[in-house]
Length: 376
Image (cartoon, rainbow, N blue to C red):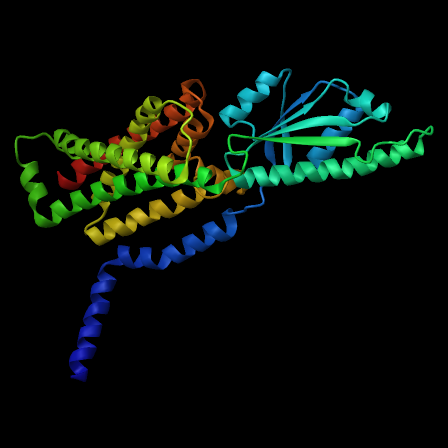
């Protein structure tokens, strides 16, 4: 009995060693997860892209803006000339924060009156918004203490206001900072990607294992026709799944839909085609359904953590942000949140559409070429 058991254990080790792809994926998966979470994820977001409308243009206003820069939470990347430009930058996602200084900012301080400034925050991501709001309020408090001290030194008998600097924060799109409004659209995007990649990869691998795929290949069907026949039903299923998830998200969690659903469904097609192409590409690499699933996990893990589904990209190190902008899910998350939460249109999203279309063409072309090479 002992010799039989040892023989079976030895046989399993030999069989496992022959499947080196599976062993390699099993051993490297924990390291990949630890690297992504330990190195790339940071909930304390700094260096947020900021648009500034300085209508005062005085030494006092420049001192305040310097305080924002020195805090390391704000990068004053855009200096604009109108409130509409700030709105456009925040709507498009180019700027996460907008700072508006009124024309009488310096005059109010010199007259020992309260000077108001407005800070606009893109609250569609509560983590980014919380960092921006806390940093802006802290800068306002420190600035008020400094300005009040200076007012007392040059006081002429008039009592200066206790808080001469009034920072008024306006949170757009999600004023109550409800996390579900941010997370649910992102999770919907990830679930759509996960199912489209997994289903198409498993279907192709399963048919190869059963021998039915080779039977279809020798039929009069061209191979590109075979691939389209595989893709079209999965596109229909993906749209059905997306519709059910949208209805449930709106009904159960109160997720707003402020933009055009027609535009959302149209742009989703480019994302779905790209993920289906990726699924077919994985099916040409995997020899078994188990390998197909494991390969898919190597796509899912960086996608869910680095694409902005759960954690803000702005808080990641530069290399992680570079990787994030190679992931198709990053652009689709921006599209679905932009349409649902901000109500923006194609004029803001055409760049995301262009990237998704390019990625989709590359993935589908690569899957067709490898499909020919693998089964030809």
